[in-house]
Length: 330
Image 1 (cartoon, rainbow, N blue to C red):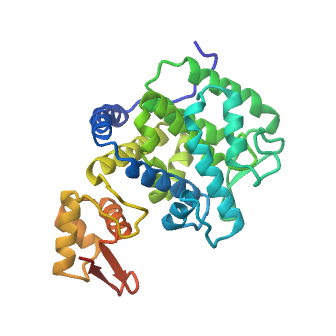
Image 2: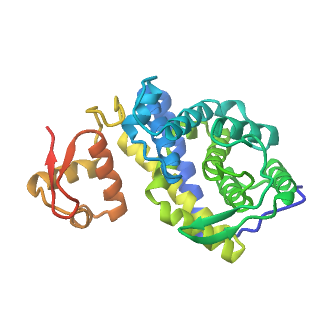
């Protein structure tokens, strides 16, 4: 048994989401094995990298990340290009690491932050705080405690009997609380959760949970703050499980085939997508709120589907968000 156990409680919502995700992931595993969607995996890798870096402030678009994946040069800030190259290399190396191995964690950070910070691959030696604007919202533990806290957390991960879905969320939250590195903690926490999940089901390597988190970035940080205030990571577990479930559901219903980072590629449409396109053709000025009401879906779901349709080149927004209109591209 591990010497340290992070504090968390299991709500009915958490248990329900674990059951739903487990059911859906089994179906998705069979689907991907049958279809062998190599291009889908490439698209999801692009979305994973773009989403995780965008949370940290990167301005690179999906098209630019795709160009980098294809070995092409792009015009962008050198630091952001370096971040993208590093993230792609790190996710490509994911299978070679073990989640509870501290040397592997440090090696991953070295690869993720190469050329970006001087202490890449090492735990921090100074105090750090998490900022929201000009306000400090979290002061991480003192630097001299980091090695011990991380050793305890990794030991818990290696020896706990908690379901991997829950364990990955608990680890992610505790990792962000400790903030073991001088920089790169957000992208490393999300990477390591993906690693933990991929050891449970390999299909998670190809599910862009990071992209879903980016779409709900404010809620992501809110869940971290709520968990810290409650000294219980349940709010964060609930949030991340919902993101995982939504990402799996999107992967199943979208089945993006031949999509190449939104560059006029084919998109296999879900029923919701078809409804959205039909309503847009009827009324080019229709709003997301109106689409949500007509389709019987949440507005966040409509926003995600709209983004996919735009990336797939099936619709184009003309003009400003409030005063513009939609064009359906046949």
